[in-house]
Amino acid sequence: MKFGYFQNIHDITLERDYEELLNEMREIASICDDGGFNCFWLPEHHFSIWGRELMPNPVLMAADIAARTKNMRIGLAAAIITLWHPLRLSEDICLLDNLTGGRLEIALGRGNYGLEALNLNPAADPNNPEGNFKVFEETFHILKAAMTTKRFSHKGDLYTYPAPGFKVDRAHTVDDPDYIDPETGELIKLSIYPGPKQKPYPPLWQVVSASPLSLQFAAENDMGIIMWRHTVNYLKDRLNMYQDFASKAKGEEVRYGARTAILRDTFVAESEADARKIAGDCLMSAFNFANWRGPGVYLNPGEKLDPELEASLNDELTFDFVNERSLLFGSPNQVIAKLMELWEETNIEQVAFKCSWPGFAHEHVVRSVKLLTEEVIPEVNRRIQSRANAAE
Image 1 (cartoon, rainbow, N blue to C red):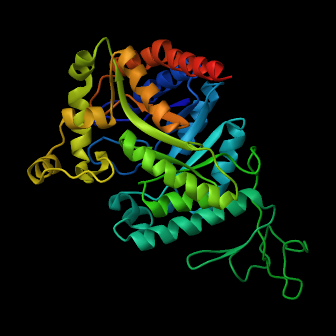
Image 2: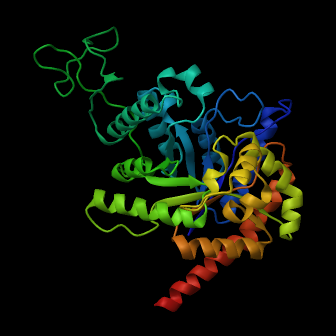
Image 3: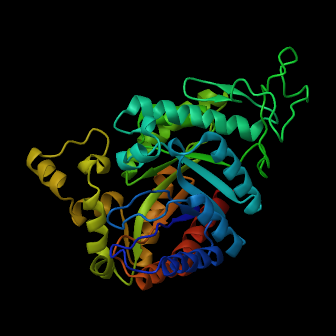
């Protein structure tokens, strides 16, 4: 099992110096880099009204983190590619892969927030799922072609590259037969520079809602999947589905759990009571601020809630409801036990921890992350290795 860490930037006061927030993120990254983490994941969000998500450009942030670390990989989770110009996205990701020394992981997202899409690319409005997916799919195929093909072109419903009709400008006389139509002299191929350092491209993931269509698209397009908050039983169901799609796409049996990850809200303290006392209020404030999915995301396959309870949880989720279903809260030993259960039941490839929420003190985040690096991760690794040795 590999371990990732997911870090956003929050400031619900909207009064702190942003450099202080950056330095806090850098401190967490340094602890993770020295503490056995495999990947440091960075999100993308825009126009936060309440200061809850203040990371507008994970590409720039990843370059900064990469320059200050040496061991772990740097991940975008997610790069909301529907909001990017496809060619600029391709150039930036390839340059970033070189800047990181080939340590880049790319998790792609379609975007959930209308506020972001309507102000950056209205065609990708998530309130129009069909249009949103169309932008995502076409942008993805352009990105993949740009990363894998020395000279490429694209003609789709939304984008056409190269732009039709170009022959010459002050800086570019097109006379290379590999790039032009020999009859018209028109540019018909493009190249981006640099190409990615990792060949054929950095590892690709998709942050998914776990719908069958999302799992199928990821599997058929050589992407791992990152899920969030689901129960162990729900994960088992979806991992089986993803395995089936991936095996069919590759024409060979894909190992159960391969290229799968789960993000877990996590807080490690001296005891479960301490974890809840220190972090519970901030966690539940974050959950209920964005409770637009309701309790359904925490349910097991086929589970039905009592209508009165469901209505109550639609209004406000409770710690007791989400704790056993979705959280890694407790003492090091309790978190170790939950991680071992997760590994034994799902064989999931990576768990990404999230230990910070809007309004939560940085000192508590540091303490939790250090307990993960000093007590939790080494012991989980030891137990998994011991099981492997015993099986030989």
